[in-house]
Figure 1 (cartoon, one colour):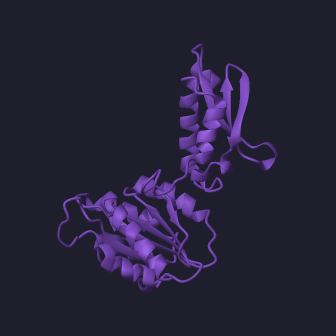
Figure 2 (cartoon, helix red, strand yellow):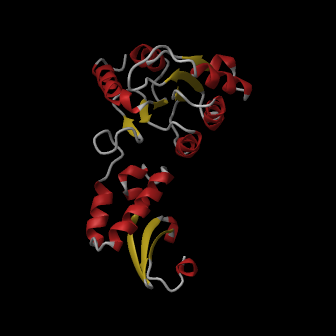
Figure 3 (cartoon, one colour):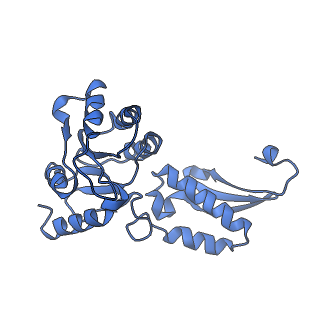
Amino acid sequence: LRELAGNRSAGFCVLESPEDNEWLVIYDHGRRIPLMQSGDIPATYDGTARFNISNAMHAACAAYEVSVPVDAIRSALSRFKAGRQQSPGRLNVYDQLPYRVIVDNAHNPDGLRQLMKFVDRQSPSGRKLICCAAPGGRQESMYRDMARAVCGHFDRYFCNDSIPKGGGGPGHFAPILRDELLAQGIDEQSVSLAKRGREGWNEVFAACAPGDLLMLLLAAVEFDDADRFIHTLASKGGV
C-alpha cells in the first residue's frame, strides 16, 4: 500500500490477526491505530460476512480521513447492525421462528457469489434452504450464472420471480434458474418452482424445520410485505 501511495499523503485500513483475533487497524504515516476486532461489528455477524468487513474498513478509513475521532468511528461501527431498520435488504436476520431466516437483495451473479461465502460460514443444526428470486428483464445467461452461483450451497432450492415495482403478471424466468440447477446436478426432488409473494412464501416456509436456515432473496418492493409476513408467522408460533 505504501508503494502504491508513493509520495502522496495517504492512510490505510487493513486487517491484522494478532493472536488469532482479527482486527481493523488504521495506519496514518507510520502511526498504527488498532480500531476494533472485526467480530465486534454486528453487521459482520462475528466476522463471517466478509463483504461487510470490507465495507467497514472503507467507512472507517473515509471517516478517519475527514478527521472523525477514532472513538466515534469505533462507536458507530459497534452499533451498526445489518438489520431491517438500519440496512433493509442486506443480511436481515430473523430469529423469531424455530428456524433462522435471512432476507437479502442479492440479485446478480457476483452479489450471490459473495453471499455464498457468508452462507458457507454458517453452521445451522438443520438444513440450508434458499428461495432464489429471478429479477425480470435480464439475459438468459445471467439467470444461468445466478443459478450456478448458488448451486451446491443448499440442501433445498425454491425458484421464483421477483415482483417488479409496478406489479405485473406471472414471471417466466424462474424456470431458467430451475433448469440450470438441474443441469448442474442438483437432484430434481431438491428443486421447486414457487409462486410470487405470500402464496409462494407459505410453501417455502412450510418446508422449513427447527434448526434450518432459510435464505430468502427478495426485490426491494417486497421487503415490507415479507417483514409483516415473518412477524405474523412468528406470532403464530412459526406455523
